[in-house]
Image 1: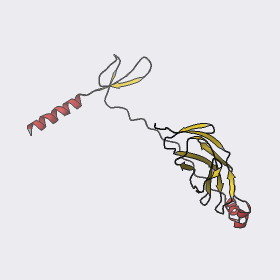
Image 2 (image 1 turned 45 degrees about the vertical axis):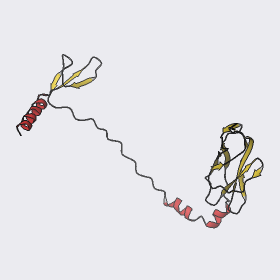
Image 3 (image 1 turned 90 degrees about the vertical axis):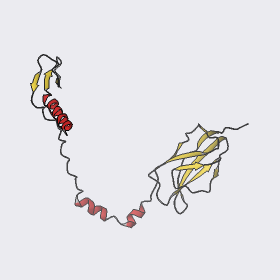
Image 4 (image 1 turned 45 degrees about the horizontal axis):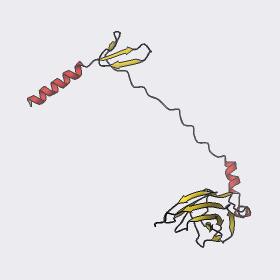
Length: 182
């Protein structure tokens, strides 16, 4: 018990003896320390308060006028159906045209960009070397396995749920290198 008391007393004395000094250097920078590093350092009893920043107020969200809401509500399903949905863009992003791919097992990925986003019931069909594959792809990343080495041409098209072609991409040609063990 005496040891704890002595230790506590020494810790209190050490803390109470700590002094804080403030000085400004030749460049105008203000410094604080427990030892006066400059001849003109001033002894302080208390550190200054921390600097804080209050962000500007967030503006309130603008509400849509009731007139615009009424106009949107008046659009009927018949009017929406008169304007058929169309894709604006479809292109193969990877592999790039004239590019080279390397895959020993012959596995490749075709990355497709479509705008607007592919609708739920629509799907992609891939044409590889003039032959349209029978698979329907619902993702814009198409993985192919065991593709032979050599020069290949690939294109892609979007089809509606009724099977009607909506848009097709231009063809992309790439070279596939496969390592052959001898």
